[in-house]
Image (cartoon, rainbow, N blue to C red):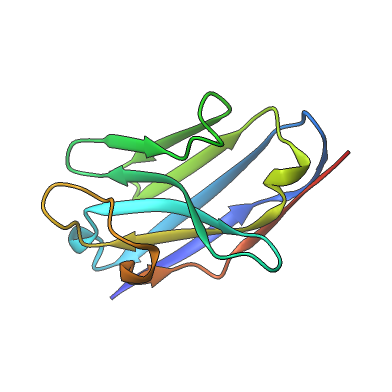
Length: 126
């Protein structure tokens, strides 16, 4: 079983920056996929970035490309998300997640991700 704990988040102005951190513990060797997802009120949870940890292959959602940067430290079992040029539409609860990869990819549906953090709130005001 994998346990995930997020840190960071908060409130910023439009155009501001925040960094989220996620620390994994437990059976982390099974988690060949790690990622960040977000859920805004009244909307479905959506992927922000997915990382295939054995190779470091990264997939960003189009909405955050060139603004968000993910980094992983396999020795410390952490995955951080640096968010810059934040927009009001980035307001959401952000979740760290982990799962076993399907093939050598992490493009499976959100519902198939098996481990989730408790979530951390990001609020961007205009």
